[in-house]
Length: 321
Image (cartoon, rainbow, N blue to C red; front, side, top):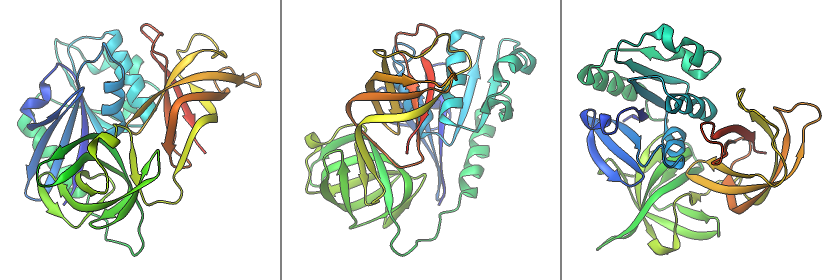
């Protein structure tokens, strides 16, 4: 069984022709299933008024579909977000007589240079994506494997208890695993695992899962919390890291600025305490004081957002260590 997570950026509701509507909040999930293979489509709702849903959709995505009617600042923001989150594979559907040449200057130097231009044919697109999901064969289980799951929704289910929806972002998890909840470091047991409404004994990186948990209530959880048995997990409210700013960023980052740090399903306000650039304005080292703890693994990257930036709200990314 293979799963593919796909961000859909375009007219609201485009993904309804690709899959069956599932969970809906500020991000909307649509599910496509054929045999044992699945595709999860993710649409950002309440965007562009709110930037966080766009980040969430891109951060979960293995690839993206862009449906473009006209070139606007919103399209530019899609390009920056997909580039900063490293979504290297995708497809572009052009309408209103737009051509690939019209987009070339905006895509140059970004991951979107490698995206395919395809026709607006939902049936063919579904088949193409199911085939890609099928090609992502599950990794055989390893003894002592560790896993990390990010939470995007959580609730109580009568007769079952606390259930979370989320994605396996690293390693694998198994039924009856004991996981730590970050931040906070409470421990929970995995009562059961579902993938697209089917029961499984394990789930691996890239899978979208529903987990029934023991020893915790839904109200003790929040979006962005992380479940893991990986001892390498880091938790911190003060981060010092090297940043890489987007090429369009007009001015230096300065102490006192309020940024938002996006990582997995976390979108955390962060005040800039100090900046050291060593003459490289676009590669400063930032000291950030976060409003709440960030959960991450060494070597991860996090996206910097500046919500007061007008048409340029994506500042760059930092390297976490």
